[in-house]
Length: 135
Image 1: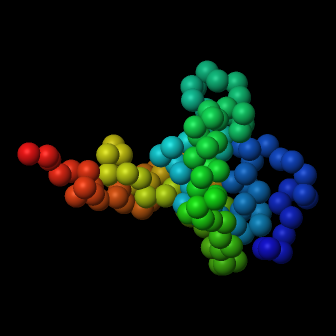
Image 2: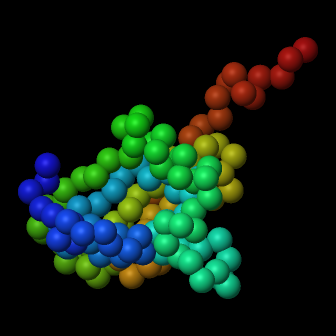
Image 3: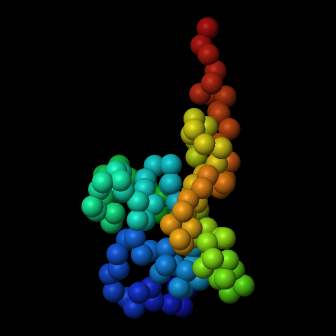
């Protein structure tokens, strides 16, 4: 669809997904970052597995749900943005807007060098239906 083969059509390690995306001028938007780990992350600093096998069932379900709902998308970015992506000035994976109770001001972003921040989409505003107090 995007006119490229990621990693030569072979299976590649989950932690290398950001590099494979940049190689093809692709990024992911709408990743459920408040529900699951980014590629290369682990639940514990002592964990040996940082691959997709480290994801819990609920995290895999969140990824599948996002793909099915169409909220997680693969986007082809312009060649002009490639240098910024390689320099980790442009995020490769952008999280979806987190819920209102999320403790950070915005969604998580993952950059090629592996660092993350919370400068993505702002938290969703609380719904009046969930904040209304019954009398």
